[in-house]
Image (cartoon, rainbow, N blue to C red; front, side, top):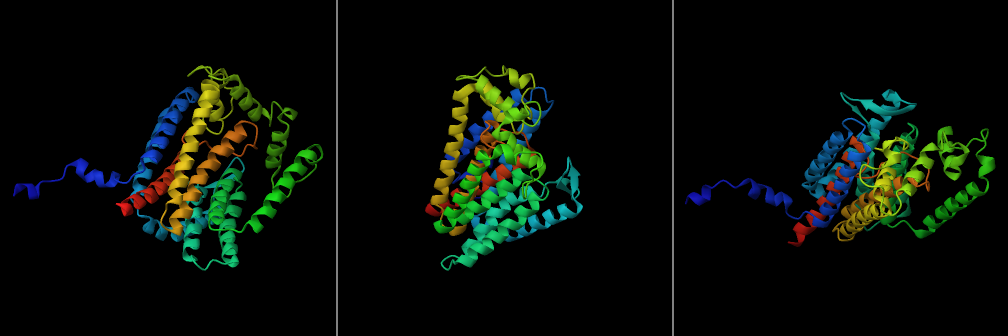
Length: 384
């Protein structure tokens, strides 16, 4: 009789919460987090509490992941519109009353200082996934126009701050949703051809269009310099080209097996700018070499493949589009960061997931993983 009134143990209470968690996704994220902690210990060795703060931010991200994973996708769908509306409202408030640092108005004081654009990294794909879920079975061309307007509004506000890196992440997340929703190839191909033609024109005419008196439409002067420096960083090796040159030197000096943990000369002699944030991949490649970089890249490949599998098996339009967009957002983070550090893409200030230092970015990653966990968990529970 007494067994009826026995109190459940802590493990018995916790077990239902852990049930259905995607083991592969959790394992890959944990391995990337360990790589991030190891790299931060070395790269941030002379930066005071950077390692401790990074560990704290990472712990917070995993707590957020765990909490969001407990929310059923149906409730997440109900949060899409309010979260998007709040995010856009905060972006407007930032434009009117925001805090300006180094020429950029990206922060807002609401009792504590926040960066509202970070909200849209998650709110944007949620909003568009909600929209296409509502239009399921009767999707027409005007629905894609509405989706484009919903996307371009916050992107324009973020570009105006200016914050090119975050605007790229928000834009790409929204475009992924629109693509997965069934955007016709007859609309995609002309855009791809136009972009390719623009890149070819840029390379062929770089000497003329990179002159000081030539203005580029819709881009600020420093953004123009970033593109021109990418094309030929030796034109200003001690100025605007310094970041790219030092990053490539560090990556190349690592060789096949690297210089060893804590033995990176470019890193510890402070030749690598922003070595704990945007350019941390250069510090990693210097100490762990080509083999380490390949292992890190493989980790991201597994993370992305697993996320796409979750998206493919998702039961609803909302969960399928959201999982696909969040997964490819991780791809955008990794591809753009590694590309800019390697001298393949312009420097736009996008962190490397789980590796780079940064509190708000780590929270966004935790939210993204939590969304994937929620979708994977709901599918597993439905099957059982």
